[in-house]
Image (cartoon, rainbow, N blue to C red; front, top):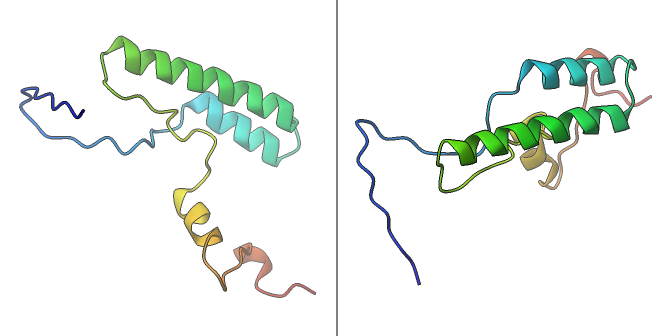
Length: 98
């Protein structure tokens, strides 16, 4: 059974699931890239920030909540990785895999 709930807001919005990354998460990602923390430490920060953002969404009464895609770095890279004939490269290194 589908239930439609109509709420009256002075604006329209669409929840896409991806939320702005908190500073703690951005710092942890930077530290991980620079080998200052390991993957386990990064996951702990991600888990804590995901728990926090889910609790906040529930607290404000959202009907559907999201993890904010906090484990994702860039949405389009996941999309591109699923295409045949594409490959990831680091621009500074160019295409050469010598």
